[in-house]
Picture 1 (cartoon, rainbow, N blue to C red):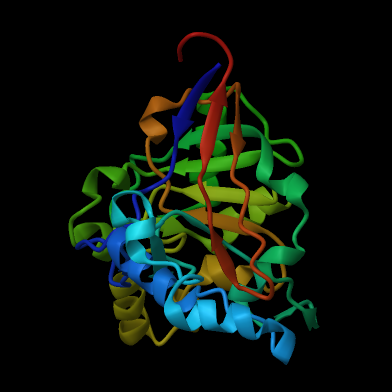
Picture 2: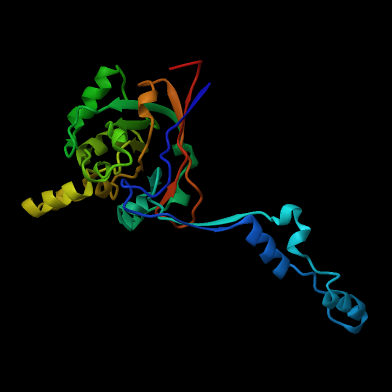
Length: 276
């Protein structure tokens, strides 16, 4: 079996307006901190006075030099948005309600959604800034002689991965239309992924379209569709060029982040056999 990593690296770069912050406790500072805070203090009471004296004299204390090479174990404290890197958006991200009920958060979704048969649709002929229509989706299915079935995981290949690391990846990509999204969800699809920054067109493009038309449907139409169509989408996939059009599976499980609107994932394609 061949495994292909479909996940983007998580780091600060021109393609990511959001930022990750990492505070690291190093091995040496960890040893000093542990030596300072991990003294074995005795229990209270006169019966333990001898142990208390040992503590005061340093016999019961831990020193940083007690660790091999004066190094303890490191600790990274990572602060980052749930929508940075390759991630899956939960229905709650699309709106507080789904059909008048509270929209589900990422921890409330069936885990069965995130593993299964996957299909790659080649939409690289859609120009940057354009909407991917239902016609485009139907055409792509015909080109690979396939009909979507319930629980398929559909991957939208726009080719935007080639722009990763540049500003253009964020500012100038195509995106799914409301009708194209609805078409797939009505086929029983729960998970749709894309190799662009966002599932909709780039943010500057949508904002300019709204300013010029005053049409609210220009603003995040595929996201907003999730208020009446319960589905999730994966943004910022990588290496779709290494995948066949069909005949493979995907594992894309989210973290169990209680009450959150999205989760980072390590998306992996599983292909039977020696090669693609």
